[in-house]
Each structure stands twice: as C-alpha cells, then as structure tokens.
Length: 280
Image 1 (tube, rainbow, N blue to C red):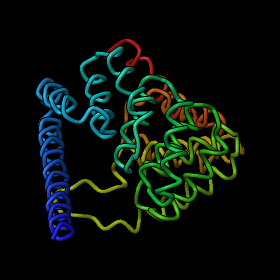
Image 2 (cartoon, helix red, strand yellow):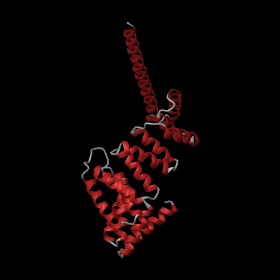
Image 3 (cartoon, one colour):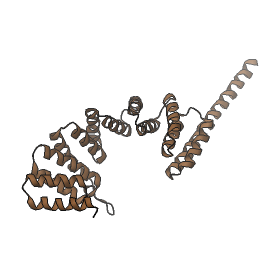
C-alpha cells in the first residue's frame, strides 16, 4: 500500500513539474510576443518596459537579455546595453535569433571581436544560417579581413544570387584586396542574376535600384584599374542614370572621358560638378 501511495505521489509531482514548465514556457512566449510587437511598432520605450518586466521573471533568458541590449542601443542607453550584452554572453543556450541579435549589439558597439566570437559559436549549431553568415562576413569586412569576407559572400551569392547585398559586399571585399579581374567577373555574374529577377508590377526593377548601381560602381572601378576605359564608361553611365548626382561617379566618369579624349563628356561632367559643389 505504501508503495502504491508513493507511486501516486510521484506521478502527481511529475504532473505538477510538467504543468509548471508548460506554464513558464507559455508565459515566456507571451513576454517575447509583447516585446516583439512593441519593436515592430517602433515603440522602443514600451519595448524597454516590457523586456525589463520580463527579466524580473526570467533573469537569465538569453533572448530577453539580447533584446534588452538591442533596445538600449535604440534608446542610446549604451552603458546599460553593455551590461545586458555581457549577461547574454554568459547565458546559454542561444537560438539562431538570439545569436543574431547579440552579435548585432556587439557590432553596433564596434566590438567586432566579440561579435565575431558570438557568430562563430552560433554557427557551430546553425552552420547553414544565412543571416548569421551574412553578419559574420560584414564583420570581417569592417575589421579589414577582406579575404575571409570574400569567401563567405562568394558562397552566399551562389546560394542566394537574387540577394544583391551579398553581391555588393562581395565586390567591396574584392575591391579592398585590389582583385580587379575578380571584381569585373563578379559584376558580370551580378548582372546575370539581376536579369533573372522577374519584374513585378508596381515595384521598381532591380536594375533601377541604388544597390544595383553601387555594384556597377565597383565593376567600373575594376575596368578602370585594368585600363578598360570604354567598358568603365558604359558602367558609369548606367550608374548615373540611376544616381545622376552621385559625386564620386561624376568624378570617375570625367576622368574616364579624359582618358578617351571625350572633351564634350568631360566638359559636361565638370559643369555638373561645379553646380554640385556650389549647391545648385
């Protein structure tokens, strides 16, 4: 009889533990939803209040700590952001979203070493996560490790060729390494990828976007460094159709016109630059 009572008591205790865990998970999900909704509406003060309230209940929840740090960045509470980020760094386990936000916080603090450490740790568990790899590639680029950044963005461009921030970062990394021929070839592949993107009614075409123009600017730089002036001029003129008052492009176009002995083009660019600098 005693054994039976013990079994019943153990069963009830197990049910209580399961119910408590389920309630805690449900409450945590509710906290996350409240914070996310405030962030979605850009109500950062509300998000700040919600995340602090939630952390009274879940003091070591990594996602909440990472979000608290990010919200403090938005509200320019930098010292408080550092404290939350340090706590999040020690709390485990991280899911992919927590890893991304925590790495983003450290990057915004210019703490690239810590941001990279977080991403490299997270990628051991989520090796295929493109958002984490993208952020790691950007961190390498900002820290001057262009070869590592190039390798990451080459892979991302193969996997997701219609994501043009991947192409822009790839070409930026190649330009920083002075890999001019690679820059030109990447530009060609980027254009091919852009041509494959269907045009949607009511939305601007990819080839009319600023990001596409920036990629073309990189490609033009490659042509210029290789002394291929006609191709450089064509690229720069395509950029100017999208960004007609972009000063660096006007300067490059004027120089290319001079190389090609295009006096009229050079004169037009000089006049535009004069107007630009005088604020007209």
